[in-house]
Figure 1 (cartoon, rainbow, N blue to C red):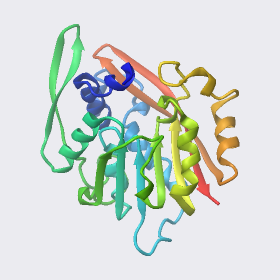
Figure 2 (figure 1 turned 120 degrees about the vertical axis):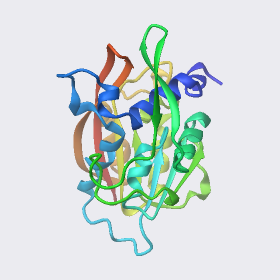
Figure 3 (figure 1 turned 90 degrees about the vertical axis):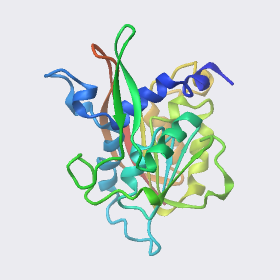
Figure 4 (figure 1 turned 180 degrees about the vertical axis):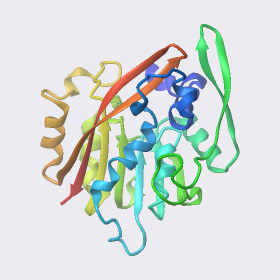
Length: 261
């Protein structure tokens, strides 16, 4: 197993992602005048991209959603507001264990870095219902979600088809991103939608350079997906990752919505 795969099983990364997914705004960014528009990214990848899909009531049995690279689960919980079934898959066993623990309704303690060796204790909880947290109207339904460990490049054959596939900041962390993209036409029913975001940060530690796009990421996605999908929205989505109380990563993800032909 490679070093970067091991990294995603560490307590430090689990805690970092719990903060990214469930931390209150002031817990992530304790400074006035900071980039507040970059907060709540795991929520906004659903709430800012899903509306472009239009009327999603076309499946009489209820919508099915697949969240690939779901990490610790925040986007999957948001999708449960509008979908009868949500499958969340991540390669990290530790991430899936955290998401499944939160699904039971039991608060999950974790630590965030303050500076040097100093940490602060926090608690992650299931998202609140209603619109107060900036999400979609309606209630979350944890019972509609199944979290499972899996590989985005080797997804199980028995998954079936979905109305929505959500993959946030995943493709530039895969060793063979093309394998994932080539699987999508068989996963999304005609008329269904793909919600895809990426910061386009191609790094050799994750993806061998000969598997990077030769041009822009958007051009590569268009060339790869256009035989089976129409691009219906493109939107820039900022996000903020806290390293400690005085150091942050601010990035701009490319958000796209594709409709299956």
